[in-house]
Length: 419
Ligand code: RNT
Ligand code: ZN
Image 1 (tube, rainbow, N blue to C red):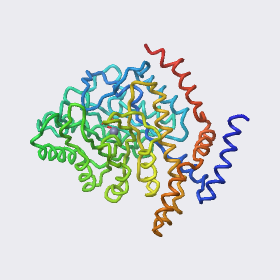
Image 2: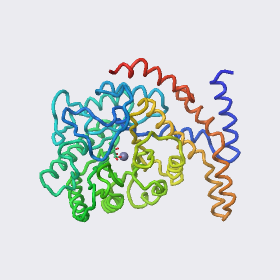
Image 3: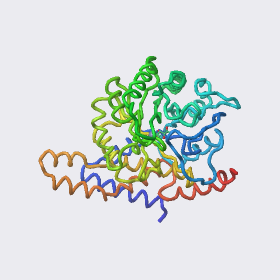
Image 4: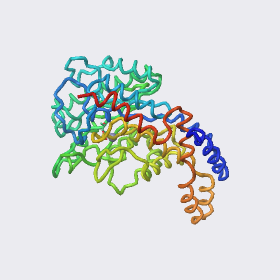
């Protein structure tokens, strides 16, 4: 039997099996189709960017590996993303960093960035049915060092305040252009390598800098703030900790970004969703995979990601949670990395959407905890995969492992030639 026929047949059986336990498969598929994932641009080039300045590295993050074929310029990056889009279903977003602007051959310092550096991106995004999200970039710059927005040195601090203000103006233009709010993430690495005795002071400075940055109200962009536990060479203290941004977000009604790699490894990030949603307007997610540390491994379909997806669906919060990805693995085929990560996130969402939630909630309300646990266990092995294959088929993209060949072909034709 041809593969497509098999997929259709399995899907029909799965649909019946799910309907027996009260799950509407067609509704789940429809919802999944509409969930836009904000695809990070920085997996394609190991977070290098294309500014014509000396990137001094550092800033607490690090891509490891030297697999050949990384995107060396904007055209190559666009071509890679276009390839990725042919291998995933749904309509998505592209998450840009300031250092990916179109600066031509000019050295445009970060306090000089303008919306015009991104009009090419806006055009290209429209042509590819993508919406854009944005990030200010405080790392990898001579003025970064250990402290940016929290720097007691006014000249340095003002430089980064100006940068971030300008980035908000860029995001506003993107939002206006695409007629849909651009989500702008603010992550700074500010911290210290060793024992720090002025923790309060730097946090107070950061609060003031943020207030100054957010003084301008915009209608077409939304701000979100991303915390971190520690950075490489900044292990002892992080100014923008989770507590800091949680407090700031709740007080000023700003979106808090949860990067799943920015917490203690035994912490349950999924459990934060319902609390945050009570006190902050929306949530931005950076779905990532930490291995021993914030290693930004490629997202896979593991329990953490499935739990995260389930908490979004259980809280009925798809309209308040922006799902973005954040990983950069330079040790494997980068296009393949994207596809694995995006598909894994969608598979997790699909599993969450196929959960027999009404029955589970009934059990819980009745104190039937054995029954709740048993059904949760059984649900893990329900034929969600047949629904997933059908989703791929319907979207006219490679079903199952077939995408491996396509990534290999693109490598042969395109990325392997980048030497
Ligand atoms: C760093 C943060 C941040 C970056 C990107 C490049 O630890 O996760 O989101 O990964 O902005
Ligand atoms: Zn992140």
